[in-house]
Length: 323
Ligand code: ACO
Image (cartoon, rainbow, N blue to C red):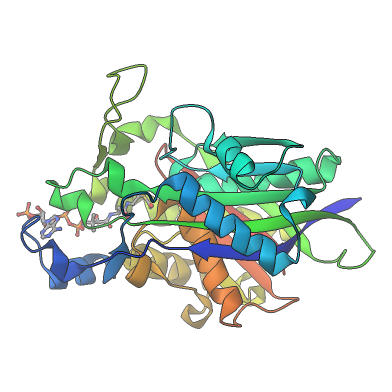
């Protein structure tokens, strides 16, 4: 029996930082409003030449370095994004080429803020079936490029960035065989499309479009959906909130994060928070937070880590992984 084990993590943020104060002259808002409602203090915005693919490549190289592996060791790349460089080919294939990988295969997964969890779950399937041995799973976004910079209800919330993990299939019981992905639960419900969507696309308007959101409606559903799917994970694994070492939620809003942890009975000291510095980076938010907590020494071998996300679609999900 094969399990999917994490071998390394990496991430990158664009150089340009946009603080809440920097919205002066862009839209009518204030540092106080943004902080109180969201917990966000700053976000990173991609500059000229920085794209989803370029950020993904850097995050991938850092994850490979952390894993002590070379690009040629990878036989599958799954990249989660809602902001690809091109409608096609997939950004994953462009990253594959930039890394100089000529074997294996690569594709994108599109589940917006839940994209990284969908990609990780898909990687787990390929590894456990033996179709792949080592997978690069990437979440990369440049949401700044699909924001309506005249809409203060959305443009203050998002940022750009990328994160990656290298996953390896290991036979259970052998070295590291007790580690890896224990449970993954994914959900979606297209009835909620009007609450969070992009008002353009190749087959409708022929334009890229802009992000539109009914923030209060999203907020209303978020905590319930997040708690339900996490409780399903706990039940499947036969564990409770006290068994979790680190909770890494999707970083959309500090109030959603705190309310979810409270509802589930997870100690706030175990919650990894980056939304204050990164804003909402959609599919990149979990691997960015994961990499931060690995590199600063919080996440250690043997820790039980809970990942959670919810976003456009709606899509949502949770994964339990033994580090
Ligand atoms: N600056 C100042 N005022 C603002 C701003 C702004 N940036 N944006 C909205 N306002 C005003 C509104 O116009 C409104 O004014 P009014 O009362 O005169 O009409 C007032 O602030 C309150 O607006 P609400 O939308 O009701 O504010 P709310 O408390 O719901 O906070 C927010 C808005 C932060 C978007 C919140 O609803 C939220 O976080 N929702 C979750 C959305 C989210 O995180 N989505 C991310 C993707 S999905 C996911 O990842 C979970």
